[in-house]
Image 1 (tube, rainbow, N blue to C red):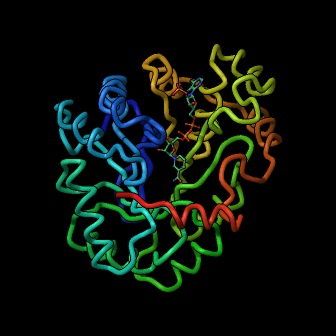
Image 2: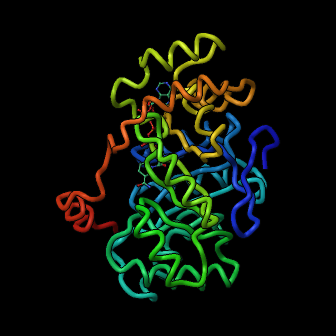
Amino acid sequence: MSSSIPTVTLNNGVQMPLLGFGVFQVPGEQTEQVVTDALAAGYRAIDTASAYGNEEAVGRAIAKSGIPREELFITTKMWIQHTGEDTAKREFDKSLGLLGLDYLDLYLIHQPLGDYYSSWHAMQKLHGEGLIKAIGVSNFYPDRLIDLITHNDIVPAVNQIETHPFFQRADYQQLMRAHGVQIESWGPLAEGKNHLFTNPVLAEIGAGYGKSVAQVVLRWLTQRQVVAIPKSVRPERMAENLNVFDFQLTGDEMARIAALDTGTTVLFDHHDPEMVKWLGGRRVD
Ligand code: NDP
């Protein structure tokens, strides 16, 4: 692992970088260059998904980088159209092949929808065979997470959920910690929603350290031991987003940021029947 990025220890002893890089909504044709730039900036954890349609391009950038495999932490996610363990296993093989890897660091169930119990059973086996270092879930609300834990052998190592200043998940983080599940933030910058980048509280805190709003947010998340995977297609922002380990927010500043919580999503509501229907209808080739 790159020495400048702190790591967290997952429930099976695997080390995961506290800060990584996400490639959702990076167009396929741009992804190879974007990931090449991110690796050059110093990121070692890359988060993709079969549903993003850019695993192959991520794989090309990894191969081209020449970075030793053991220094990288590669995550991808299984989409929800697949039912049955055999299909789930084929979906894994496909992702691994597109990425050009012989093992994954982290494999996640993308949504708590569809036949995800079969997916989990397949993933438990693949983990046992050493093909995945850690298995986890994404977008699981507390009831779904506890249900999965209760009825299976392996406790998910990670739950990747929407987490940012407007949807902070502090209580849920505690519950996950009590069960040994690491919280990982998607949308750490809220995709800029609610005017995040000009928020006066975040801007004022940043001004005290000569840091941008994005840096304050990423510092706040990582200081809470929340793994974050910001996305940017711009090299200068990639570098900016990594440069958050040379200052520390005070208790008072953490409390001021805590007060920004709205307790609800600003991006996707997984309890909305229309959203569940839309996600369920999405097909990934
Ligand atoms: P983010 O919260 O990371 O926000 C990305 C946006 O912020 C982009 O528009 C980017 O623009 C901009 N940005 C990035 N850095 C800065 C900066 N320093 N200053 C100003 N603007 C900035 O959104 P994402 O949804 O991409 O979340 C991150 C990752 O989380 C994804 O890429 C994906 O890997 C994962 N994810 C997972 C989901 C799931 O269901 N499991 C759902 C959504 C995301 P620009 O690129 O132009 O710099």
